[in-house]
Amino acid sequence: MTTSTGHLCRLTRHHFSFSSSSPYRPSFHLPTRPLRYYSVGTVRRIAILSILNNLPRLRNSSVSAINSSFQESSGHWGVDDERYDVIVVGGGHAGSEAALASARLGSKTLLLTLNIDRIAWQPCNPAVGGPAKSQLVHEVDALGGEIGKVADRCYLQKRILNVSRGPAVWALRAQTDKREYALTMKIIVESTPNLSIREAMVTDILLGKNDNVEGVFTFFGMKFFAPSVILTTGTFMSGKIWVGRTSMSAGRAARVDCRTVDFSGLEPQLGDEEVSWFSFDPDFHIEREQMCCYLTRTTKITHQLIKDNLNETPTYGGWVEAKGPRYCPSIEDKIVRFEDKESHQIFLEPEGRNVPELYVQGFSTGLPERLQLPLLRTLPGLENCSMLRPAYAVEYDYLPAHQCFRSLMTKKIEGLFFSGQINGTTGYEEAAAQGIISGINAARHSDGKPLIVLERESSYIGTLIDDLVTKDLREPYRMLTSRSEHRLLLRSDNADSRLTPLGREVGLIDDRRWKMYQDKQARIEDEKRRLKTVRIS
Image (cartoon, rainbow, N blue to C red):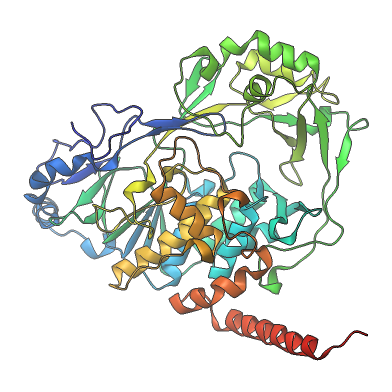
C-alpha cells in the first residue's frame, strides 16, 4: 500500500484498510498499530490518507445504500435519532472542549467515549497549567472554554511559577483533585443542551462520494451520521502500557500511599497566599483550603539501581522503538542524559482531598514492578513507603498533523478533524486548546460557515497549531514559551483582550460574560487616560 507521506517510522499492512465484511460500509479504517511516544507518551507516526488510492471503490457505495439496507432488514430504522451535526470521538480534554464548543454553538452533537465515568480524566499528574501551558488555559477560557473554570473549582494548590522573571513567562499552575475534576466536567458535559453522550468504541469512519466524512461505525455495529467528525482518541489508539517487559492495553501511573511517607525531613512546597485564577469569570473565583506538596531528591543509590537495570526498561532494553518526550523524560532518561548530575528533584503531590494517593512527579519509569518499590525507597522520606500503583511507559499511535489545515480539518477528507494527542502533542492543556478550535470549526463546517484560524501572533493556540501543521515533528510536542516569537505580547493577563472578541463573534461568549469584558476594557481605558494626565516632579 502506498502512502501520502514519505517519512513514516513504521507502517503495517493493516493501516487504513477497507472492511470487506459489508458492501454497504464505505469506511476509513482506524490503524491497528501505529507510531509511538514513550513514558508519559510514546508515538508512532501514521499516514492517515493512504486510503485515497481506494477512493473510487469508496464512491461506489454511498451512505444511502446503508440506509436502504437497514430499512429493508428492520422495516423502520430511526435514522433521525442517529443523525447529528457533529460527532466527537473521545471524551478526554480535547473531546470535552470540542463537544462543549460545538453544542454551545447550536450544533446537535454526539460525544462517543469508551467510559462515561472517565470524561476529562487526568491519567498522569492531576495538574493544570505551568510554563506556556497556563497561557493556553487562559486563552481557552477567553474563547469560552471550560478547562480553566474547572481547574479553578477543583484546585488543591495553586502557585505562580517564574515570578523572578518577566510577566510574559509567569505561569499559573494548579494541582487539582483528580476525581472532583473529572466529575465536575462530566456534570457540565451531561447538562449541556444539544449534547448527547454515548459509550462506544469507534472503529471506522464512513466516507461519502466526494472524499467527505459522513459518520462513524462502532465496534458493536452501530452507525452514527454527521457531516463533521472530530477524532480525539488520546493515547487509546493502539495504546499499550509497558511495565518492564510486560504490556497491557490500559494505563496506570506511579502512586504511593501518603500514610507511609515521612514528611518531616522533606521540603514543603506551599501554595501562594494570594490565589490567582485561570478564568476571567469572577463567578469561579472561590478560594479553598490549599494542600501542601513536598520536594525530595534522587540519591546515588537511586542512580546506581537504575544504571544496573537499564536493560529492563522498554526503550533501553530495545523492545520498544518509540520516541519519548524530551521535555518530560522518564527517570532513567534523566540518569542517562544528565549523568553529571548527582540528584534530580522529585515532587510528591496529592491526587485528592480524600484519597491517600500521592503522585511521584518526575519519577515516571518503564522499569519492572519488582524494581519500582526498591527504587522508590531510595528517596529520602520514602524509605518505608507503600506503592499503590506501579509506574508505566505508554506507547500509542498518532497521526502527523501536517495532514491537517490550521483549522484542524484534514486536507483530503472534508469534515474530518483531529485534536489532542492524536496530533502528536502531550498535555491536557494542548489537548483542550486544540479541542475548542476543532469544536468551533466542526460546528461551523456543518453550518456552512467559514472556518476560523488563529495566527501565530494572536495566541499560543495559534502558535501550537501552526507548529503542528507545518513542522515535521519527530517527538511528542509540548508547548513552551520559547516556541512563540511573540511571547512578550502573549501574556496570560491579556488573553481576554486578544481572544474574547473572537469568542463573542463565533457565539461562545454570552451576554453576561461579554458585559464583564466590556466593563473591564472600559476601566483599562479610563486608567490609561488618567495616567496620561499624571505628572511626577
